Amino acid sequence: MHLAYPAVLAVLLFCTGLYGVLARRNAILVLMSVELMLNAVNLNLVAFDVWLRDTLHAGQALTLFTIAIAAAEIGIGLAIVLLVHRNRGTADVDRLRDLADPPPSGTPADDSVTAPTDNGADQATPVRRQTA
Image 1 (spheres, helix red, strand yellow):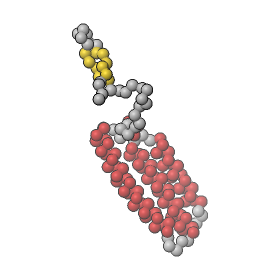
Image 2 (tube, rainbow, N blue to C red):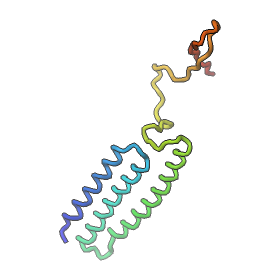
Image 3 (spheres, one colour):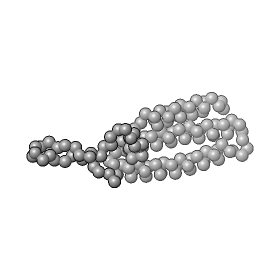
Image 4 (cartoon, rainbow, N blue to C red):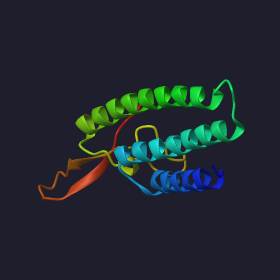
């Protein structure tokens, strides 16, 4: 068996998975793309194991460990995605900003509250909250 055929297929799978991770916004599609990348690695491990005619079958044994780790990763990842979707109503990766860096100290924070004015008009003026 030529080594080029599975290697080219693995490269195509890995590139498809990499594109999916970089371009997709849905967290479930990102997890599926990571699985594609792991399957490309597994294909390379088995192909090189057959090509080298390893008597210990180390590539195939390592592939089994990779499959087990991928199964645990997808289980935990889906649980996190389901909890985020339940709390936020979306699985869009771009809209999840809880762990984002805070804004720089020079820019005003978004903690203003609107209070009614004394003149009875329907307009409201922004009032800064007092922070301790």
